[in-house]
Image (tube, rainbow, N blue to C red; front, side, top):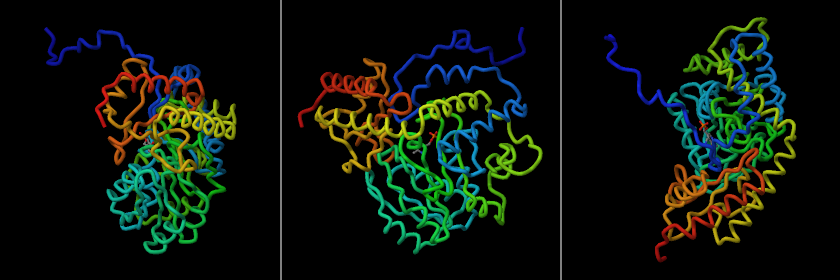
Length: 391
Ligand code: PMP
């Protein structure tokens, strides 16, 4: 008789099965075999010299991806949210002023993260699908005098690619750090961290980089480090404390590295491979490919009679497209239909766009005309077969 009150679960006697699926939602995107195989390499110790070399390669890859020379560049063990918290927890102390541009869910989330650590949060708001002018941003900077300004470059809940020119210098004029969420954009749309005066920038592994979710590249400028390393109080999170992470990733000048946490080495292998794929193609070619494929996709959607949610063509995110939910249809029936009949994931809205849009992500290797044709065919089929009320 066993003394255990919980028996081994029967479900675990069955082998693991995961279907192959076309991942055309806002992320994760499909992981190519080459990157999956990289992740299947042997697990070795997180403090072994080979892993330090891989971490160093990852840092170089991120510097290329972000177009930055910042030594304080590495990958957080966690998802995009972890990187958002890493940025805000380190750069902001309780009582500091933070200005957040809210034109979708990501501004809402950043404001919530800053509020939770006792920051004085002010927001500027634009309707979902909209952007901010530099004049609006400057007025808010001069009124609130924040230490940090948050903006989402690729607003994946609304499908907006926000213009960046001039925002970095504006922030610096008001002695404010510029924090950019580039989770849905970097690699697929132009952004040059150093040239554009971005002080903190982060992304996730599962979008354009086509790696599994679980690692999040991040970089801090010299100005950001100055503020962070002269804090009065310790950051609220030990796990995300920049001084620990900097040492662990070999970004500081200390001769030896201290154990901080057990790094997800398999996820690092895959991230390194995702960065290698991008470096092979070249950043500019990747931007151009995403731009052309998005244009081809958007034209195809319009030919089908569908309408894009973002009216201004130049403000459309090339990686994640928002389509106005077709009138007379239930958007949930459409997403369920394409999943069932075409084995293809597209998604509905998120946050302020729930019920308003369908979202299609074509990122990294998924950004191709062939994949666009698949999505268009699946949508055409869904519109022909899903229930349509009289409108
Ligand atoms: N920011 C943006 C723009 C995103 O698209 C996402 C993921 N959809 C996140 C942040 C959060 O990333 P994660 O889901 O990896 O935590």
